[in-house]
Image 1 (cartoon, rainbow, N blue to C red):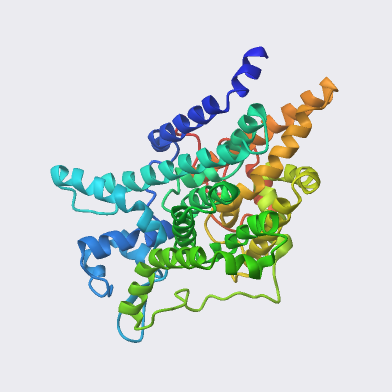
Image 2: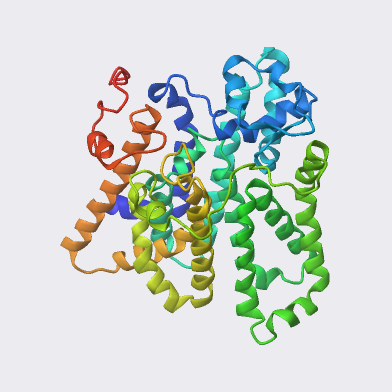
Length: 448
């Protein structure tokens, strides 16, 4: 027990151990899923910009189909959408591919010696996973730095463990690393930390430029990430509460202009792409897909066995006592966090496909785990202060079970024992804690 306490009292060591595990997991993927390739499903669409533009030299998308294998052709169908002008539009935002770009270049340089012909497998798929793990580690690093503004080392360590192994962040950093969520998580994590550092850096122009770059990347990865702009309310309400928003804008108009310009600079590749392909500078690329703002599916998003946030990530239920404490201790921060979470919940619940299709857990909240982390930390801090040893032991065992359950169900998903979308209560009861039984009959325990 003393060894465990000593270990948890060193959050940097915990962070390093988590990072090493993230690096190890892709090497074990063949144990769980023998045909694993992160460039698939939505990940295919996010990545497609790179070979399409850099290899095929085909921004219009009309010739790209000729370079694809039969399997890749199927992946591109529904993701490269034919327009009336004859061009094919990639419906996914470009931001994720921009962040993958350095890793793609490195893979491409290695491929000069390998001579691989397929740009969607092998060294290129490894580059995507390497990028996702890199950004996940960066995101966790800045999450740790943010948590240090609120908690001691032990609380930080436990919170990092709960986020890394009790949620689907691990899944989207490794198995489905081509999706955009871990990239958003990283950018938003850095952005939040910089916002909390606002008072010390508000007079530095480079600080405002960096904030603009981060905000631009957040939107370029997922346009709905624009709601994290509400984080600017934290310094406005804390530092400039006497001046008001208008006076804040007057005092910092040039810096705000710099922030806007740098954000726009990051969005320019997307705008240019839209102009070249659609003849319009702004374009809603999810053609035929809509928000049903008058019929949000709140309950399903939160509790459904299909993709419910708390159903598949029950560790997040511990945020509720934490938020109560947080509101008392950090009122402004908690109000802004709650506003962002509620707004994201409304957007997700209003989307025509509220389950967000194939995913482990509800992936639309993965990038927003940063806003769950701090209230979760307050709950951890509360539990650590409990004096009744039996009750504390019960909570400890229960949390360990939730961590185990998340990781167990994650490998079930990897092996195909959990339906990609549409899990019913009856199906869930069938696979609950079952190592070999799944809805796909031929997938058993042959990997053991």
